[in-house]
Length: 275
Image (tube, rainbow, N blue to C red; front, side):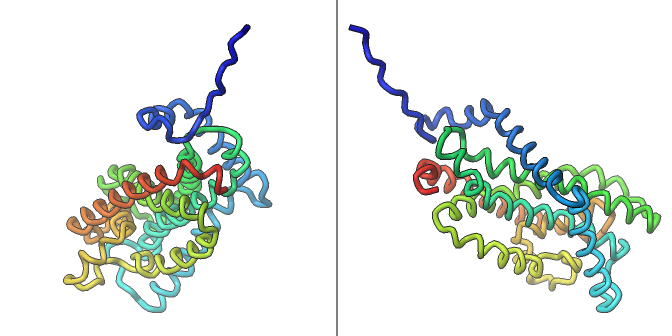
């Protein structure tokens, strides 16, 4: 009699040693999901990629008028509009990444319940889509530099490093909130509150140099402070980077990334059942 082959059971996380190798093996799926989300975002909207420019542009205009012209906050060597734009672009990237990644698993419930692949691909691809938004909206600050006839110095060469830091700052909390949102769906109501609060406790509309020296390191433990200060330093803000604070921000970013990955991996086994 022919032998009956036992069914093959594929579980997420069953072979821990192969998980990270699986991420590389499924790189084509990662690219497909990212490209699909990009097409959905830009092809099924009335004004397409203009949304990636209008949202940060309107925020920059409002903050420049309110804090630069009315409140007269100091801007240092940078024109105030460039000071705000250099902070608003990474901040928008962070908030978009957090919002999109938090819904990535719930939005792909049918795919998760039918096919095995490393689930980390979904929030990671959402962050990449937000990176495309960032690249498009970067044209705003280029136009502002032409308008003010402002040319950054050699520090601009360090900008890609701070883009990577911004990506890691978004990925860690994104993984944590994504996993929590699968089990506790009311987390989607908490994210707008986090974003709104974060806008005020991050130096988007003002320079972090206005923070009293005795509180500045504690303030800099906000991961986005190091990212924003780094962006401004790249565009020529001589007082925009505070080295102890930057190191503190990087340390908190690393911790959030570690705990985000660890918690996501621990919860990943049950995503298909809960979702």
